Length: 161
Image (tube, rainbow, N blue to C red; front, side):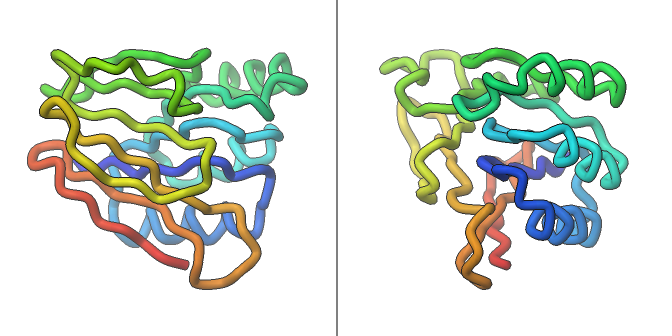
């Protein structure tokens, strides 16, 4: 399974449309958004990928939480308050927005995905892959990134745009 990972879109619909194109080109099977969606239009645009979407809300989503929840319900997306644990395939996954929501010990977790910092991070900790795709709402072309994670191997492919 190919997992498309994005974060902190901050209602930058131009970039979100480009992200949708990238994820469609690469044939992702599931999207994960780690927060700061900020507006329902972002979710409606992500729906164009045509795959399940799961995520957590970020600090900048709190003012629009009711509208975002309603949109998620209408689209069949699963969004939660962070941190949130789930199983994808055979992998135990922890979703967070802020890295402070990630526990110090990652026993039993295969993959940690978070955002908030707008800084790319890919590291191994306690046997888990910890990944933040970094900036994807910036206005500097070529400096934005999203990730694709192969859930079988936990290999990460970075897509720059």
